[in-house]
Length: 157
Image (cartoon, rainbow, N blue to C red; front, side, top):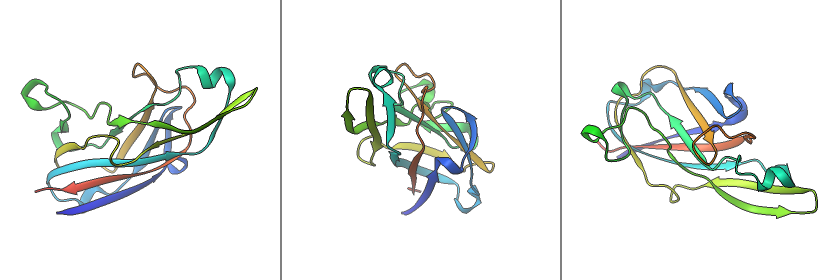
């Protein structure tokens, strides 16, 4: 089994919204087949006001939308066993949170063991993919940090 690694620096992505970035990638290197997708993620250290730090508007979920042919993603028990999009790909964990009288400092992370793999079918299409950070409830995170992440695609067959 061959594993493909895609390194992402959010500062290099095109801004779609405050919570979403679009990235360019040549998907032609990947053969058609079944893939197991995992990811690792680390944000820049965020400095938030005390009120922002206590609000639930910070990113705690991530959506990775890779345009596989037919949009066949096995993420859950859904109609016919497939879903029409990736939905939420995983959770982000707060690490190294420090508070003082006026500010909260935090780092968001996820490693490949925090979230279960998502199975993707087919072959990616086009030359772009999107990453979106979500807050509690699934809406766009209000104050999204810059981040680095690696998407791992393991070709299973």
